[in-house]
Image (cartoon, helix red, strand yellow):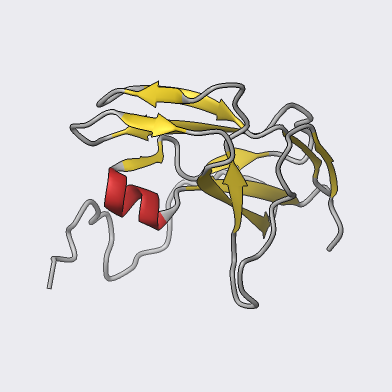
Length: 144
């Protein structure tokens, strides 16, 4: 699939690191480093602008290493970029650690996954079919 992109950053275009990678790393595009204090959130720009085909979305997801090692993640994970959005790709980072986190220009802060999706058409009914699970949710199937 070919996707149109404008890169206003000084960084290389996102790319897949391995043959089987689902996501491409997004890099911070900052004029100066930014400090994220504990529990603080900030939209970090990437300098990227994309034009997705209709029927696709771009999902902004956390990088597992950043989350595990530093406690920094994407707040609205996954963030959705719709096919008709033409603004800069931004990442809502949140620092869930107890220490300040410094975001540097060019740092890999999230990953982008391109995903196909369908559009739903609602059919109003009076009742739904029965299942074994029924209305059980929020952990009702147990933990083991």
